[in-house]
Image 1: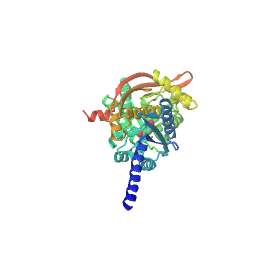
Image 2 (image 1 turned 90 degrees about the vertical axis):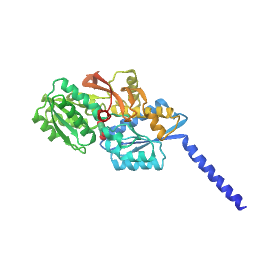
Image 3 (image 1 turned 30 degrees about the vertical axis):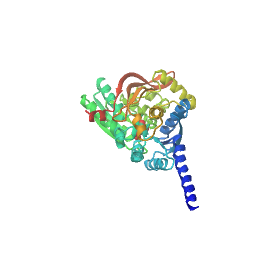
Image 4 (image 1 turned 45 degrees about the vertical axis):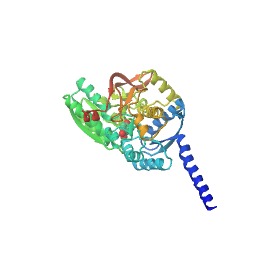
Length: 390
Ligand code: DHB
């Protein structure tokens, strides 16, 4: 009798063990962690909208698995990102963590991805070293050096001699400053560097220094969403009438806010991987569908990072036959596709995205301000890691 009861209890336990993971296998949960509120909410809003558009267009079933998205708002604070990532991994049993609107947020979660052996898909953050923080990080945004070195080359070729750089004082800003200064001085130019605090920035005193220095150009990096504030103070300091050219990576003339900046932005030259004005069949379809699904909101480079991040997850799941963990990260390496931004691939060594960088000028097109692309540097790798591997 006792033996029989024990057998019964044991068999119930076995059934529970088998059916638990077997059921869980039917779903692939993606934990999407974004700043949906706070100063960087535009990044969250853009990426969330793009991820949802991708799922709407491609369905929620891949390689026999149901894709389940769980969105969490980290408010742009690294401690919150880390706590949310921990909870998503331990309690929700997500197979992927994705999003990461700022560098400190991506870095805070890196050890958790390593420990859980699941991919961390970085859709926004862009400091070059991020992918070195975990072998499980794969990035679909860009790196600041990748976008910036072509700007220095353009400036030197156009005969600019003296440039002041003004950057937000944290990872991507310092990357942009160093990449620009290194390449521009190597080409014979002269550079002065200014750094502005990331939190609650007051650009005015720094812009006054720029006005006093009278350089040929001001090279500016501020994170996505902050450019409008920067431009307002640029005008208040009279820099729009000073003959100082505005140049930089394209974050400052971000498509989300560009049209609201007014004529002051006209003529700004930037280098970046995405413009809503990119003329290709893939982008025309993407922009139209994005606007339609989001009350006319124009997609920016953050949106395309989110859209491609989802594409990467879907295609890697197909390649791994639905397997997750290490197999999913491995399946991501070397994938290539045609994105709304142009042709892209995931560098299998660095897990960074290889992509075209476009030189653009702010122009009025059909009554709206756009970053109009006029030159292309094809297949650019992150130059920091490319230099290390040589
Ligand atoms: C980062 C954030 C941004 O909004 C941006 O435009 C570029 C880089 C970052 O924190 O890595």
